[in-house]
Length: 207
Image (tube, rainbow, N blue to C red; front, side):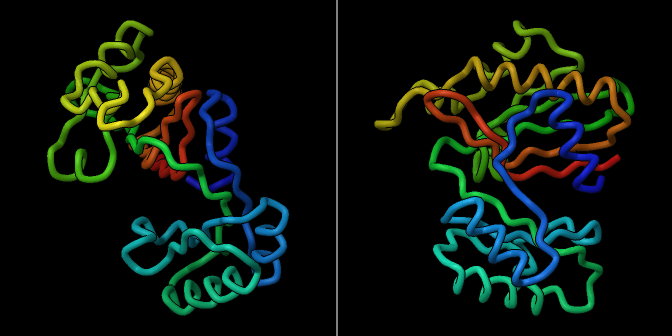
């Protein structure tokens, strides 16, 4: 799904996303970064490229105009020969707990929504919860509480507890979007949870 349609859907369903803008040249990227405020991330903007990081299409924690310009050149070199529409310039999100919220259409059950801890937890341990859409607030509460790594949400290992109500609200809204819209698959990865609120940093929607 293209960016304009994606952003419109997220706004419609009140799903929080880290501030970003599209730049179609190096000078636009530098200007956008200055407007957003440093540090920023640059991510390749292309319908053809799904796994941006794998091909060198993501540069993080850029601190000034020189770094943004250099990162733009490096990304464009890495994706040479691909169909590219520009780069996404995104304000770096503050540190928090990384989670994943996703969904897909199951042949038997229809739209499903998924919740879990991000990184190794989802890739290796498959520590996730699933529900058939649309879900209620009670369903969302259960999804958040039943993952094995739930202690991290409560502030284990010296962390502050995260805002589980905000996560539950996001899960309910994502399930509505999956149920109401023509979406085959979506990933919000990562979703960063804070002591107050949560925010999607990267989104992929296939329609």
